[in-house]
Each structure stands twice: as structure tokens, then as C-alpha cells.
Image (tube, rainbow, N blue to C red; front, side):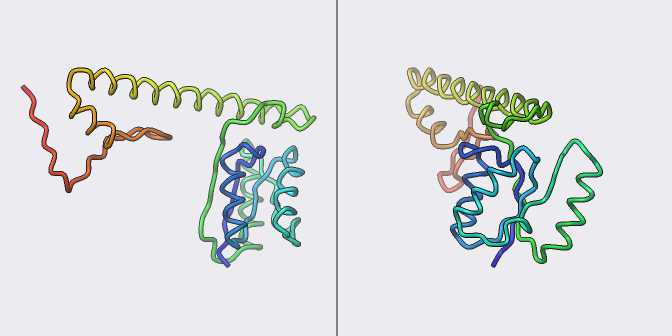
Length: 171
């Protein structure tokens, strides 16, 4: 059974929650680095998948603390052999959901940062899409190629299919 270490589980809308659910459905052993304010949520995720050794799968983690990170590394080494992957994901989640009734300033700062990054990502995607549409008004074939080869998401990239033999000519 492959083992994974996961951080960033905020709530049911977070990227880490969705990926963890899939890993657990596929039979993976997931270990979680969590803030105390998120313990309840991660326990609920593990319970929903019939995990019995829940407390062994939960590791305290405050990424703002070097000591916490070092303690986590030691605990992970002691509990897990053959770690197949690590997922560190901070995704948008409503601020009230992250705080979980506590006054977790760090959690709010991370949520605000993640929300700003998500807004920026969406704005960039919309701008690129609009630009390609404007190009399509003048050069439909070029716009079709750009729609196929320009990818947006966490990173934006131009990745043409080499089998199409596309060459660029400029004046």
C-alpha cells in the first residue's frame, strides 16, 4: 500500500481534501501534517474512509515554526517507510472555515494569500482567453492553434504538439 504525506487540508473545498479523498479511495495510506484547528476536519475525512489508526496518521505541523517542521520530520521517519509522495497544497477556503472557532492568525494569513493567488490565476486565465479570442477575429487558424497549445492553471505555458510541425515566421 503506497504512503503519502499531505498538508493543506482546509475543508471539503480544498484541493488537498479532494486529492486525499482519491488517494484514500485507491487504498493509499495518507499521513497528514495539520494545524490543531484542522484536526477535526482531517479526522472526519479519515473516519469517512474507515481508517482505524487515525491518531497515527495525524502529525502536528505549524509551517511557521522550524521546531514544528523538525518534529514532524522525526515523527514521519518513525511512522512511515517507503513514502511514495508528498502533497503540499494551500487552496482557497472561506476564512471562517479555516479558523474553526480559534483565533488562528497564521491560518487566516495563509487563506488570504491563497485567495489572492487564486484570484490572480483566474484573472490571468481570463486575460489570456480574451486575447486569444481577439486574435481569432483576425487570424482564426492561429487562434485555434493557441487554444490547443496555451495552457493555464497553476502555471501558464505554451506547449505545442511537436508532431504538428509548427514553425513560427516573424517579420
